[in-house]
Length: 99
Image 1: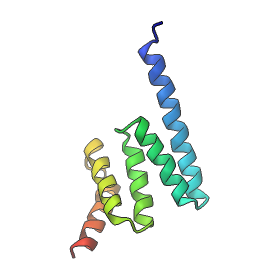
Image 2 (image 1 turned 90 degrees about the vertical axis):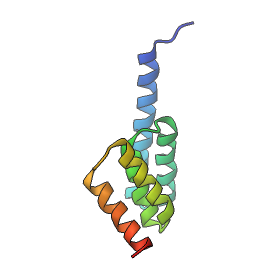
Image 3 (image 1 turned 90 degrees about the horizontal axis):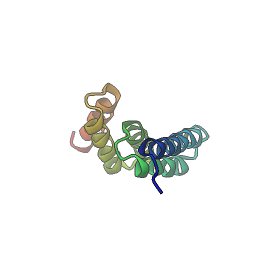
Image 4 (image 1 turned 30 degrees about the horizontal axis):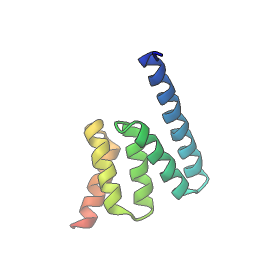
């Protein structure tokens, strides 16, 4: 049985979008751990999703998990280079680490 590649991509994209939406809702409601878990689920399906990496970086930063936040922002910057908010957060964390 053949499955069309675009069909698989559509299923994966919908699933990633669902995880991103759930993560956003959880974050807004104050469930940081749940939001992180949902963003990581999205990342496991789409490792090149800069939005998910950036967003999980924000949540790691909020949770004082600076090393994980730095890694997330660096990955986001690899995927979507020179995005101002990513660079600003990364610079802030690196400065705090080594003032």
